[in-house]
Amino acid sequence: MTGRGVPGQWPHVVESSGLTSLNEDQLTIVELVSGLVAGFCAEVGVMVHQPVMHTHPRDHADLEAEEVHAKDFAKVVESDAVIAIGDFASWGAGKELAWAER
Image 1 (cartoon, rainbow, N blue to C red):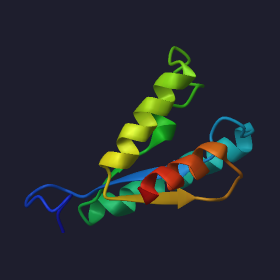
Image 2 (cartoon, helix red, strand yellow):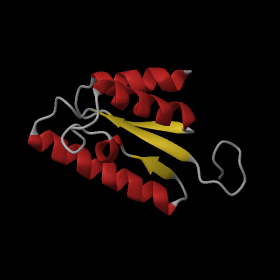
Image 3 (cartoon, rainbow, N blue to C red):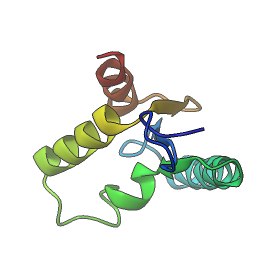
């Protein structure tokens, strides 16, 4: 298995889920599921970008909405696939799935 058809490069996927409108219990579930998915994928040689760890406003309050949008867009269009965690409603996850369709 190779990323973007490059021998020796792990495939890259982006997880997509609700984040900004979640309550604490919901966020805990998303973080747990995100970590489990990333762990399972790593076992088979797939790198997973987890926005909950890179652009969540709770931990990255210094990022402007436009920066988050740009970072997430870049990760999606550079990825080999998107894994959607659809436990909770999300505008961002829907947007990321639309980007992946490109």
